[in-house]
Image (cartoon, rainbow, N blue to C red; front, side, top):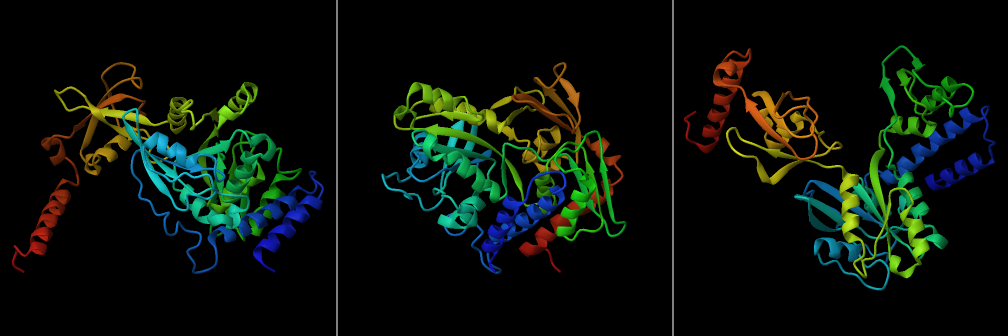
Length: 409
């Protein structure tokens, strides 16, 4: 029996099983089996690269953030890319005009944001239909998803729910955050299960038995589990698998010039949604504003001692990539700054007074000004590993000269 047939059998068994507290342990075990089988489908056959990006999908990251355009064929993704970035992407009246990944860059609020126009995905994309694996694999490398929907067809075809299900099956969790669960494997000691500060309402009448049944499916017999919030069994399964990505998603309803004002107002009031029209250039500025708010980027301006701040090119920080602390800003500028870091003078909203002397763990806010002060030569000589660093420096110089042939062996 193939993997897809086993998935259908398990889904049918779950549909036949009554949902109550007594059957919760059995249902959770079936969900764990489903998650394992779906992960095998996304990986593809052994030794093949069908689950990877593939030809036409290998695009290097540029800019401060990366956004993927996801949607059914012929909903206006290529037209939107051309309107926002000026990049020429073929747009025609027939479906599947775009067959590879077409990148473009948006210059907005002093930052550069990369936009990827991906081929349209259809129902069954999570199982490989219509090059769905390549599209979803490319989407997992992005910081945000911009889902383009056809406002004129949404009520009768419900494309939003179909796309959400396909991305959910592929391991993408839209507009969700990781559960507050501490999980660590051990070599011995059995399973230690604890619940702190909450009551589990979705694990049945015996939560420990449900958790043990899920762990048994993954052949985990020694671990520690600490649950700190009322989460679902699906959240716990995602934590064990480790191949799930939590990503932000903005739903953009295109072609609103073809629907009534009442229908457009109803679509705009949905959560995480906005309405646009690429044909008549309607609300594109509002779309960029919503994208900026959804990305939650933090711009930091640097300042040298005794000079005014440099507002020409900010250092852009993100919570998802490296964090928004002073240490993150130092790593963005130069990795060697951490070794000789003394303190930082910060001006902006993150401070109680300006300037404020801060350490590496200080959390910055948008448009803060940072001045990094490094240790003096006297302070560096007082460090314990100063002689070791000096020796490493001279060894590196010696190795370079030897590689160029200027030093006799």
